[in-house]
Length: 467
Image (cartoon, rainbow, N blue to C red; front, side, top):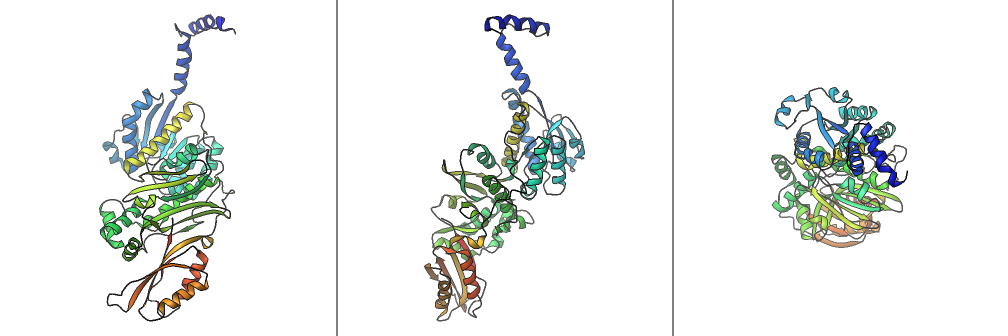
């Protein structure tokens, strides 16, 4: 229809439908607003620390989402077994219940936020929500790392999406950066300090001279460590997050448990001191690196030179150092856990879900490559090459150092420096060796041979050096 004839046509037909306008632009504007103001009813399951933060953050910003972004987001239902929590939160007119089925069975709820934790009940809730055509937002790293393929395949079949920004890095937008902001890059490597508990403990050991047990106690007293800190200090928490990041950058599936994970429980006060004397800082590091043989993925304590950008990440802070083929290096830094930082990421995902629902584009960023039949090829840790810090506790006798260096030399391991400390009256002394680049397999074989010797008084401490 020619442009000159369009305006009378619209005026007549809009009047017939009881829509009166003086300007044709009002029609298009009102139509756009009508589409964007689709009802987004949110149901939250679990309002503990993070869930409570999400309710607070939503309450603080919901008028902005409604009025400025044109998103009709409403907190419709909240479920938690501890019903006393509801009175402490700004729930507005949300229906509060102790039964998660009330959220699941409400057909008007189109976004379910899972913040219950664990991989039992949470898995059931997430899968059932997706099957019923509801979008899901979660902060559950263990769930994604261990059951990702099942969950994403279910979402794909149902035509909905699962959002999981808060599962890695708390308030740091790491997932969004990789999936969207850096989509024009091939991510070549990631090195990350991704567990605030371990970083706090190692920082206390370095700055206060505390042994591991005392630093852990301080973390628990300050609320930075759980009563049972095993998942954190054992490296499991970092392992879950690294599995998710590795899957994202590989475009495949990296199962949790398929790569080496070491924690910080074996790091002694002496190692922190010796590292400082040698110009290093000890951190629990997640490493993801693409190489010709496949994907190098691991979590372990590492020594970083004091000049390294990650060496300055202290206390409960986290950081992710990415390298893209186009953008080069990029650092994302911030609080990786806690009530409000994590809530920030969850609310960001709720808004993403709302935008996609309003624009009728539920699968804007698909995850259909995250499948059990598309596992990434991983490089076994025995095949990696690195520099090493080796601490031997040995008898203070002549010829000991020569025996150690002979075993290392037999495996082709070149020594960069040696430091021997006095035993302070003891019958044994620590001998510290820094190697040049060496194969992990060779280092392990050499240590196995050295530890057969009678002069060895304790297991050898091995810490990889990242530069």
